[in-house]
Image (cartoon, rainbow, N blue to C red; front, side, top):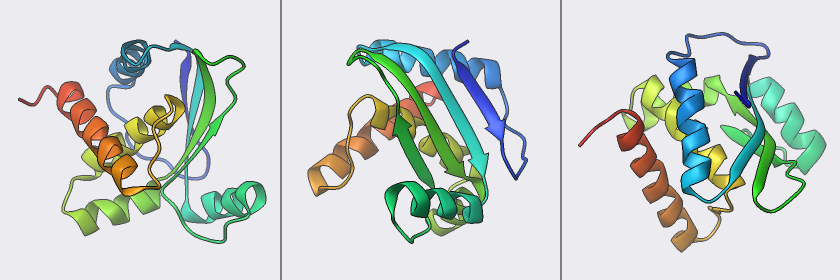
Length: 142
């Protein structure tokens, strides 16, 4: 499988990893891409802040950073850093389970690699719609 999960300075139970890897591969195919290599790195707020400062020159906490290393437009290769602490905090803030919020962020990063944006209001709305669709499909909710 071209999807790898790493735990940098934090650990938690990431259930059904094989099924999630298969789902991510199918997500890219559905969006018209071929997945070559994707690494998810789960970490703390402190570690992600350091990466945000070093590579993007932003001095803010965030739940996710996506780096696209794709060599061609239709082949996906990248790294996605996720702060598990920020995901946990956001889950509480939005009244969601940690598992649901974690998968939302996992899909969010994959969607960024497919070209979806989230800076403008219309882009945010479409991104949220795509996240919700993937959550429902992955968890088999009607």
